[in-house]
Structure formats: C-alpha cells, structure tokens
Image (cartoon, rainbow, N blue to C red):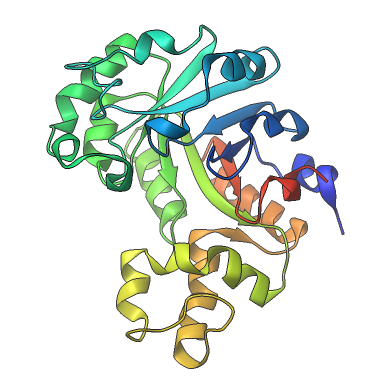
Length: 260
C-alpha cells in the first residue's frame, strides 16, 4: 500500500487545500504537490504578504477571495486587493456566511463576480451555491465533490462546456471507518440530502450507530475522498475520466497526512 508523500504524489491530486486556522500554510512546502489553495476563514486569519510571497516563490498559490467581503469587494471596499502579492492567483467565491457580516451577505454576487473576473481573468470561480452565476462568469469552475459530480460534469461536457473544472474534496487516506467518520462525518452531515436522511439529534462522528452510521458511511464516500491511497487514486481516475481537470485535496486529518 502507498504511504506518506508517495501516496499523495501518486494518487492523482493536483493541489492541496489548506486552512490557515488549522495550520501554518507554509507547510504547503512539505506537500509534494505544485499548487496550494488557501481557504478564506475571515480577515483575521489571512496569511500576510510575506508568507504568500514565500509560498509563491516555490508553488502555484491560489488565495480564496470572497467578492462580497470588505477588502475584496470590487464594487466597494477593495483595500485588500492591492495587498495580494504578485504571483498569487485567486479563487473568487461568494463567501461562506460564517465569515461574512450580515451586511456583506446581503450584497449582490453576480455584478461583483463579473467585476472581479475582469480584474483577475485567470482566477478560478467557486461554484458553491452560485452554480449558474459561476458558469456565466466563466473561468475554471471550482466545485465541491458530491454524489452527482461525475454525472454533472459529463452533462457539462456534453453540452459543450470546454473550460476547466477543478474539484475540491476533503480527503482521508485510510479505510478505517471510525477514522473517516471522525474526520469528515460532520462535514458530510451538513450536506442537505444527508441532513434530511439523518435521524434528528444523531451523532455525526465515530460514535454514530444504527441508521445514522449507515447514512454517514455512505455520505462520506459521496462527499469526500476516503479510503486507502489505491482506492482514492481509482476514484480520482474516474472523476478525471468524466471530465474533471484538476482535483484539490483537503487533508481533513491535518496536513501531516499529505507530508509523509
């Protein structure tokens, strides 16, 4: 069985996604992948320019920028745009409500996304919750893995879409069921079809039992890449065979799992 850095480099991942509240994003330099996507978790957790410059000297760096947030709003307060170092690319997103103020969540996405794409034409566009707007905006479509991803991407290709599709997937490189549930059970449980199927008040980690465990066991396989490196590698091959261009793995158990 593949282990450590070899596992990550040979599974077919194209990039690693890191959360600055969980680790020093400079750990991306320890991951054997050439691209790092840095998630946005609020203005207080943004890596400073020197850190981003250090990363960009050795990796392709994509910084998530919420177009409705103060500092990144191309139709309002855009003061943080100028602080993004040259050589750092962007992932334009509407922004998760947990990291936006009430006022920011009320701002219209479509005109801001269009304006941001004009400023950063090479940016990826996050599709969560704004799929049609993102598609209309163009650029690399950055999607979350779901149970329908292969079908959806095949349909896009059949309809004539020839742009890039990048896929974000929480990842757990083990076939231990308890470990999977502890790492991504709660994440899967937040997806609407899973939330509807779960018994009210059910545990969403390794302590889940009965119907809840059955639902979660299937859900983590639908919404995350879990299993041995060989199993994950096969799933990535299937996704790319369906038309996905790039797969971005988020190490749900911590960046060490991708470093060896």
